[in-house]
Length: 198
Picture 1 (cartoon, rainbow, N blue to C red):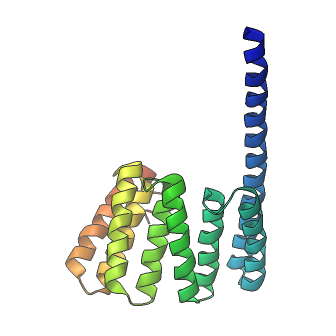
Picture 2 (cartoon, helix red, strand yellow):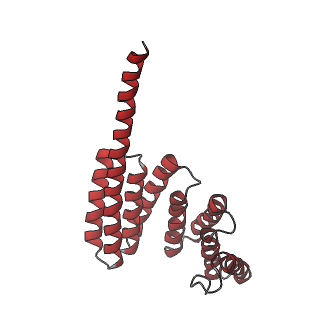
Picture 3 (spheres, one colour):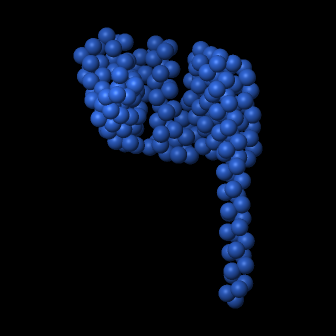
């Protein structure tokens, strides 16, 4: 009887291990294509960057599904490429799609989800949707505080982003308060010789 139970358990464990290896391999393929797409975006080759991203999307959809974190990364990268092309409606569409997927796949208290919120804030600021930008920057500050704490560089960056928005809104006292807070955190965590502190 014990031998009969061990055989199915062995096959189940082998199946799960194989599935994890396949998923890991697929995730690496998707990540590699996204990295190529990012490099192309940096050099202004947006159409080719979108082609590389489309290849990543196809693999992620076929092998992992529409609600996978890997597909969420494809959506996020597509938003980033479109933002750099200054196609803001497309960028917003893909950032929102990435946000929805990442919230389901990873939860709100994950750096990838927080990055969606930050990029949406930057997009809204660029398109003069100031109140939406402010709401998203404030949410990013909260998320980074929860994820890494008040001494983390990502928290300092989100504080700095919010300060920049307040400066652009003409709210200089608020901006100054947040800029000083960001400087203080960066000085403590990165050191005063670091370029981010400078």
